[in-house]
Length: 266
Image (tube, rainbow, N blue to C red):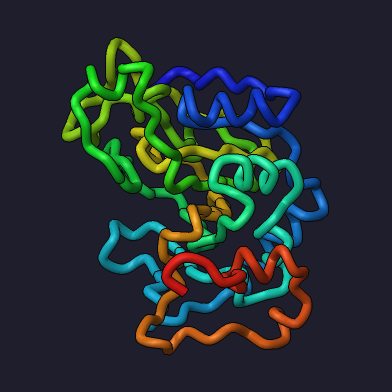
């Protein structure tokens, strides 16, 4: 059982951006209030799969545990729209990825008792480099993609917290079977319902086993530079925005969904 990861609530935007760049993650307490947590869980429960969108919902073939993973949640119910640009989160994302950044995906993920351990992995390693080059102070690798995890349960060891290896984005590689880096071992995100954690795609992390008797609810929102493509399946122009939801989006939310001003390659 991994030890808990120290969760520091930095008070200002500069400190939060520095934490994301240097530690690989930043912690934000109480981003979602109690009423919103109830609303989000209920909305996640109502979602049905669209197989063409690569959604999953079932227990067969995966060890018998509930695994419900719904893509494009922002396009399914109006409840999810505000999580495109939730206060505190969006300021960090725009500071990291630029004022013309966008959301490349939003997934509602519910996992039940029996879910096994994942292995340590990176979500995406945009640049592979030797450690000594990454450590050179003249080298600064941009944060190409970040993920915001909105935790909707009070997390504890048995519920299957996310484990991180702090600073592992500076390894210049994926774990490849390693369980730690430079003496740092994986640590668990033990936080409260309504807390959020933003992390960069190169950080070594994994979901752990759910040995509890309750379902874990997690909303994931993925952000990136505008030049990185959005992941809204089904593809080949088969994805369509829900016009009722889109009509209620703010100008910033529309930009995050892809309503950009003309720029390079347009």
